[in-house]
Image (cartoon, rainbow, N blue to C red; front, side):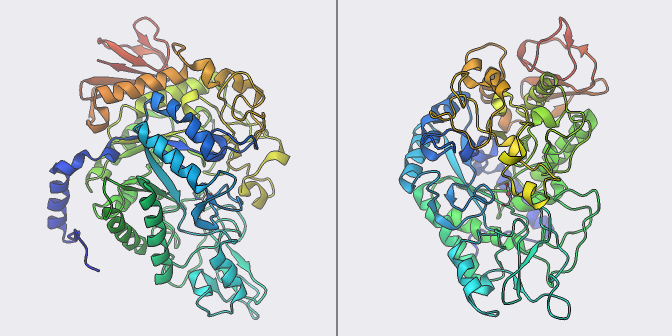
Length: 560
Ligand code: NOJ
């Protein structure tokens, strides 16, 4: 196949090409400045009453998102799945799990979103399938060396009788990354043993995924969030790898044989061409948990993906110097390849930022917190800091991600009983790591009702803390100063002042204060821990109450 727009690899020509792309009229594509709202379907709204959110529930509530002022919704997986990892274990990529509804429910949701002017991004999980996927079932039934096994990563074991796994890799969820099948071979699963990794060197796998992309593009999706976008290709020979003791799931500074291998980029160049066959600007957003923005920017070179999550921004502490550095590095790194920077503070895998930013010591990504975690932060103080962090984030140029419930100021749910926990991390570590259930608890829509309006029957797949009545959407709706109204006004002002397509210039400031200008808006984020003087100007928005001429600690202000 010939490339439609070959990317010149020669450095000078490449820079010229990037620059001309940045200047061309094509640079006003929606995804360059969009605010994307992540819906976690099982916890958003439940229309069927079984305690798990569903597509009809989403459709019923989409108007509240249009009213919030976001541009796009991204839905975490709703495809057929045994739900061993909350849908990130797909058994049929071309159908909707009955838990969430039907393909018709999906079409109705998509139509309603489009009517409301919202774009829709689906979650695609290409690194692994469910062990219930017909291909994996066929692989188990077939012999070693067969074409059926070649779609996954089956290998002989080590040791005299193959009794040891092929290498020492650990699953991201804890425990070994290999499971042995009755005939003695082992298969690789970077995540749960129910999530076997595909072998992306196999053309049949590549062709299958082109077809899956087309299936959803034909149905009208505006793009895909690509799960584990840095993991599809593994280093030749599958060499042993031991992560440093203090490493999170990204590994350490040393290259990791299952993350960020050069070969993954060829896959996204191929997918880029598939999307380009379709009308409208369809997008690929990569979940590439690489340690630096400079590395992540490789996923959004002009002929690859369009966006990639800015995890170094999400992982930054509430520290002025650290934030300024990551903002500068992000704008530089993404800009150098002609892509917008993205910004994100919360998602379904991390501790909600209303809690995380105030934790004494960070817990490694994915480990989570629970009743036995020491020194948990004060909820109100945590919320104040989260509002300040969001008010800073939404002032930055590029595309921003908002995770459902953060617009309500939800903290992490801590007191989930052991027997209610569902994250595979909890089971695979025998309860040593709490995992991610605390950020996945169903949303409170109304003060009244057994599940705060999440489900008419009052059922909820994870218990909601009683204190969430005060966070309910209807308790905040139209209430001046509420977190919901803060998000609404920030999103409206962001549009009005075109901050998403603007640029950052830093202003002189005291230590611990971020002062910047984007277009005609001045932003002051007080990260110093002490009140600081409020500069002159008309106040457009403030994350907290201002104290006369002062900006209190953990407060961000926009001035016009
Ligand atoms: C990243 C997803 O965000 C996470 O929820 C999931 O468990 C893993 N990928 C495996 O698919």
